[in-house]
Amino acid sequence: MKAKRLYWTLLIIICLASESTLHGCKNGGIFSRETTIFGTVTEIAGHPVDSVQFVISAYKDLGNTKGLYRVTSDADGNYEAIVDAPKGYTGIGITVAGVDNPAFHLVYRGYDVYKEGKKVNYCCTVKAGGKTRYDFKVYK
Image (tube, rainbow, N blue to C red):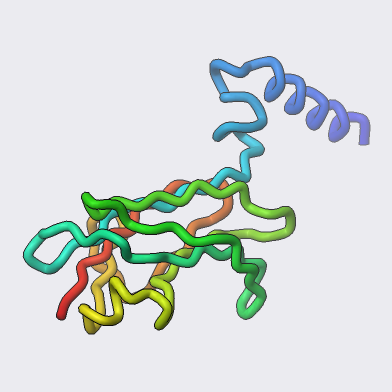
């Protein structure tokens, strides 16, 4: 029991004291809950697509989600969501917003998803504390 308590005490001291090496306990450090999902939205031909809205949600387990907010792709097709994952939630996800997303649904039929440059058949969750790139290629 003493060894376990000593371990956690030392870990917390190291975390708090070593801002430059481990980035402390926040801002990406070893106890960070900060999660980043980023990427681009382009047409198949490579042209950027702006004003596509994404819904950012936190996940506890299958079917247990909490909507957090929305992000929108910019004029260059870039988007980024940086989220401090709520306590008790293990992941953050991003989905293309539903029918209330006219920049997407009035123009495009669907999209392909690329995780870290590789096409995937699923979309788009990140473990809390992680950073992942998801690119969307939309088609008419």
